[in-house]
Length: 212
Image (cartoon, rainbow, N blue to C red; front, top):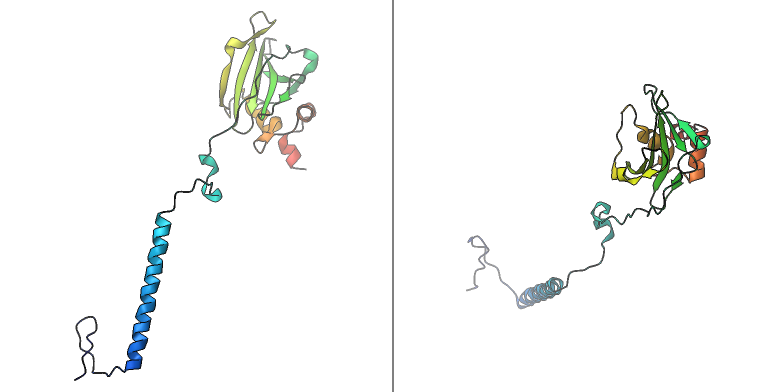
């Protein structure tokens, strides 16, 4: 009597006669399946034994995860004290009583992306506040290197401080005015020193340039 094939689940199938040729085909299929499984196992073993890659994966390495390599240019000497004939006035706010001007001979653009300058703020009574400062275009920050001393005849570097955020909306926020109107564009200096000085002198703000 032919044997019965019991499928998974326990139900009996109808009787069937399995010829010798059919049995050979079944055995061949099982052999192929077994060989494929063995090949996959070998590949899996090779993959698990592979040592971790130290190569940069490009798109998987985010720029924000990279350490900054920025370094500030070294300031070896202080600029000369400003002369009235070298001052170029610029607008900060219609509501401030102070007037602001940059000494055009002291303005420089560093390899570090910092625009450095001497600023002179003058009160209606004629009192002056003079600083040597720098504005960093890529971070919207500014710092002070020195202020004029009490005798008005030299620099006092004791008033220096490191970079800090530029404040917006203040009555005398001249750093914000310089950054936005003349010094920087797309987080980079808006040109070399000569170009920036010319823009201040002829009141060519970044807004007016972009409208052309």
